[in-house]
Image (cartoon, rainbow over all chains, first blue to last red):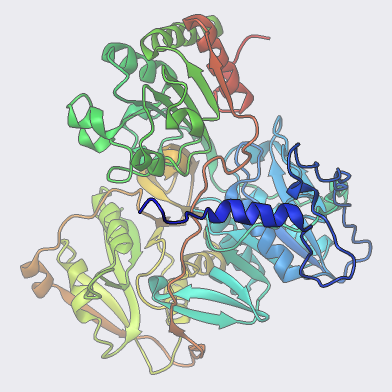
Length: 382
Length: 252
């Protein structure tokens, strides 16, 4: 065995390489040396490319016609459904028509997102004091005024309960036009609508009003559009009396809210030992309580409060996680959360990676402090 | 004077088995009507004479309704217009319906269309009702599990969705005993246009919400804060995101 000649293929390869400069496969006559193959020394850094210029804004000066997208808005921001709707409007409009975003805002509300990057050529913001409450007739009047004045060839709404789904059908009934509801796709010049509780589908030539199913269309991803603000004075809707007087929202015991409907959830994991502080915090915040699988297994919270893949999938506006490490099944349960705040002692926990704001501290210290601060502010406001 | 209430009912279908049964939302509408004090409740359906919907409709009778009105349609006639004609003559004080049907187009557009043609105001998402035509107090479901109180007068149409209280069970003996009153829907109705090209739906995967959908920027992890500083940071963050009610916002 010992008299066998041992060959080291790697060394032979390197020797071959060092002798002969490598030639590129393009077959050019000139031998090209890849600086990275140099022996010794660091490979040369690739020449610095100039940073790509920001994509220029696409302006549409004289559109063929207008497509009006009526957005729901979530605290002044474009929701996921709104962005999908603008994407759908863009597809319907093509290159020759302008997408107009219509937002009905009450006093003190503002559109906080850039509508141009989301695909809107024009933005129309109509303000009425009534829009901050329940005012279906006022909203219908606003949509009709916008549709008539532009004029809009198509009106698009989200199929969101009590928002776009309601408003879209009211507008359709007022105009006397049958809408295309539960639209899931725009293909080949036709809109695909679901029927029969989702069992069948029907392609239609797009009518004037279309209502798009949530999670069906994709948002706009092209170069940013102009998003030019239109003068609302040109779209003055007639004042129509509301048949029903809004007496306001009823105080609801947020603790008894079903988890799927809660807007604010505080959640406890194994890192929470002071349960009295946890319940006090949920009470002070007016938030619903949730928990990871471990705390429900241990009996600290009822099973109905378990959040995760085998528990409940939640979509609150904000999710406050105390002492949760962030197992993948739990993270699946909060995939739909808009904002996540985590308090954990472990900097490298998966929940901290997922969170938009993470505080590395002991939950037992933060929870009472938060409760105390909330009670103080409430007392000062009272 | 008893309150005149008409509830629009349709033949439902079990979502998994497809078995004909009462439609869940229509049943909730009927439930709310039956709980109103001093109300004369009529359940109304428009359908073909031998449409095979009787089994599903009898489930409504089993809820304690003595009789149900069936408008018998000729072949190919539009049930929407049959209902409209009947209701124009009837003009009930209260018209209730489920938000959408369980079979057919299921667009949920019919109540809106009817309300517009009848000139009735429409309330969507009714969960409770008190009062009388001189002063109603209606509770509607608002987003996020909240409830909104409205005050109105006169006749109106209301749709009910899953937020409304669930319907009572249907008793078989009552369902069998109940009477289905058949009325001819009338002549000269517009035809029902069945669109062609209906095909079974292709399974489309839903787009999953990615974490940090709106922006992945701005994630921060703060170390070394004491309790009070941490609490203030959290509350300021919530206020900045617009998630706190005004009373809890930081002063100034």
